[in-house]
Length: 359
Image (cartoon, rainbow, N blue to C red; front, side, top):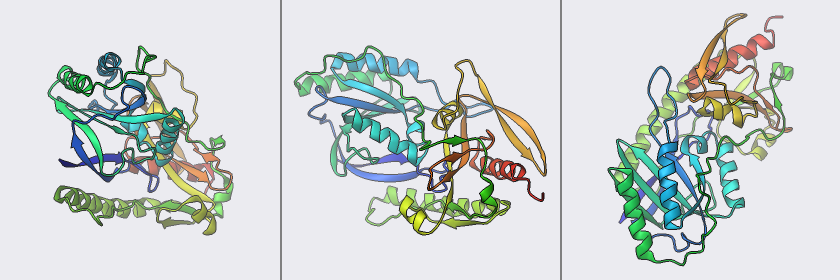
């Protein structure tokens, strides 16, 4: 049976990723066929759980579920060496590539997607492609679902026994290994904004629409159409917010490092999205284990600020500026916020105050 797997690959077009996710449709065969080396090679688990609703949108609880899953995997002989929350995988393009690089370095051969939603569970198991697409196009993917976690594990266990693969995974960890925030700072983290921005153009990447070429599935096309309509709205909003930026900037389409250099863009606006604690880890901030929340500095123009405390597990967006030659990262104040619009306004306002506009 043919299916389409919705891979949530957020890449920063602005590198904003509060940012609406870009859906990359990967064609695959939905089967009960397990990868041939599932019991002899390493696997990585990318999991998704519902967020907790409240005053802030926070990452949902997952450790209890994954503890049960890992015990089941140990019994089945599945060597799941990493468990990665999908909101961390998709925090930014740089983050996603870093996790993929880690998977390759640790010789991960199979990828497992485990999803909880609407009080139901589903699991996909496939050979890891070694790229950010995760799954090779037109590959066979094991898929099953259940109304409860126990039932899901029973179904997977039955197919593992039926496959009767050679068992070579003997040193499986007893507990799940949760991947946290990997650094996306390529060189040095600087908690300021460079004064040269007063006379240097800032490159701001537009949100990118999706290409529907060669997509024949009606549901996929409907999703792409809806997504692209949202992208148009977001780019209009982006243009309006950036009008308050006090120096020269230019909205551009997504470029590689070489293209940025050829076009003489020295500075690039980027952002990262995940839980507040993960965003801090990815930007090389020191985080204390007992910190329950982080104080964001919110600019009140023209020269005042207020503070806003956001829980450590709340979903936030943080904008920063990357120097494209040195690859230093300038973050300014900690001004993360719960929407990409507010986070961008915070960054522009704090940068304006720091560089003493009008003085």
